[in-house]
Image (cartoon, rainbow, N blue to C red; front, side, top):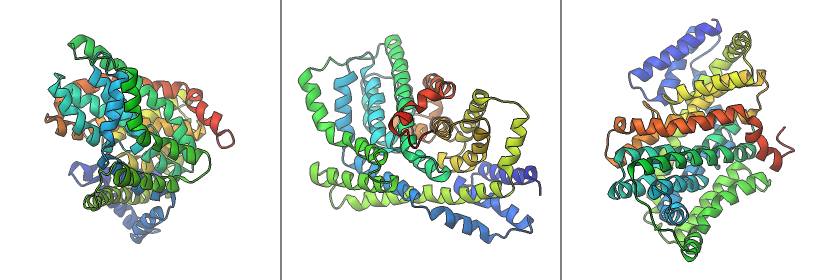
Length: 434
């Protein structure tokens, strides 16, 4: 079979299964079956073989541990401490609670690495409060959902761990490269919140005193040390990303059970069960997506795509835009982890062909896929925020589109100025980043 025929069978079967509402993880595995039966060189048992090979990865152990660390931090009640710190920092700006929402998401992203944990933890606390203080429900939901995407952009990011492990890219370098895009997304969102606040007359908190700021900072200092421990340890070569994830779990346990005493022995099994359930979903997706990606590689579909795109004569910028569009579209329909495994491996040779740095390529992919968390029909973070805000998802789409437009401008900046994105990794890790 030709690469085009195999691609047609794989993607055609996958799309048909998704349309009839088969879960994405199962659809990816089932889409491989026809190819295994049609090709006389392959057997269906290869599906399970490739799934097992994908699980036999030390780096991927970081995924369940980072998810557990995020759930432990949520259960430890650190969100309220971050809210208090954000209030004394930006609460005096027009639309204070909107700015607080964005800043809390940015701080929480540096602790959890998960956008869904961000949307659920912060949304349950701030969306009801925003509605009570006179903010439109659609705006409260939109700002919470859009700000939660920073959870997979600002390090430590679970998507970056998966990307680095899959494509042999420095995870420490990816973490460092994600800092600037995360800060730019936060700044762009706060600009939009400011405009909304001026136009709609949203309330403002009184400016905090120096003493209030010091007290709030002291209360939030221990949780805020989490990203410094994780990123500093990885970049400094003290431990691997997987070891860092375990340290994050132990640190979260100490904070929740011994320091704050908000996680009781009775509560702990519930947190462990929820984390195991979410990790199982993610890891099963990784297995089936890896089998799907193996077939793509076996039939040389990425090479065929490179040959086709080479005939277009696209340069670095044009290729970056095409890559971003591909990830944006795919991210609207499937979860980010299988999208990385399938689309990332296909487009990686295309990026290499035009001389794109692997870390630059990764940041374009991660940021583009992050936006899929707030764009229907997938839009998982938007679904979570809308459920908390007790509105239909479609009611928040106008405000989401406005906020997302500013975030798309950040994505364009990432594509157009790769040296700015790579500056911090090159400064801190010059031996590992070319």
